[in-house]
Image 1 (cartoon, rainbow, N blue to C red):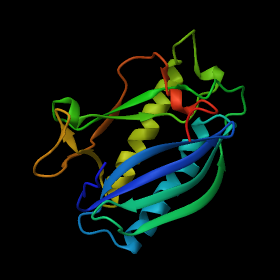
Image 2: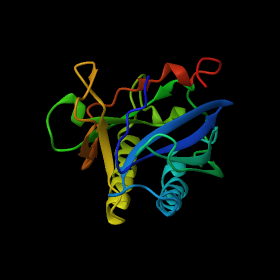
Image 3: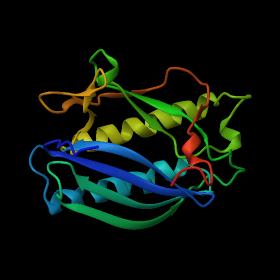
Length: 204
């Protein structure tokens, strides 16, 4: 697929491993200008802080956050930075299978599917699943609050989390990507979700 530039946007990838499988979360951030190396360094610090103080405290011990990769989407062959981390999840309880996850919905205050996003938790402890196929109320609350804290943290340093819509109706948007600032993290139900490509031997 040809590269489609997204001016001012940095793609942040939270890289991790679970049971030897490479997994990740992606977050799009708007720095308000053509990204430079200093922007990537600052964002790496923000994401590292959130992963260390918030994210890993809600992840099982079989998940290790291994780094933050930041790539400018402003143009092809733009600046990029990757850091190395070893942040192990602190929930020392038996873990659910790799493909078992939970979806946090990202809302922008604008209607339409293009203006919504999803954040799939990197891993669940079996204790997070209160009953068969459903997460417990406490985890649901804590996970939602955790993602909201990242939204707030990025807003506080003027690099807001964005939903970047490259396509509409299956075709590239003729005027280029459209951006929707993420305002709220929420959940729509308590049912666990699945990410098949996170199964060992299936994905990366």
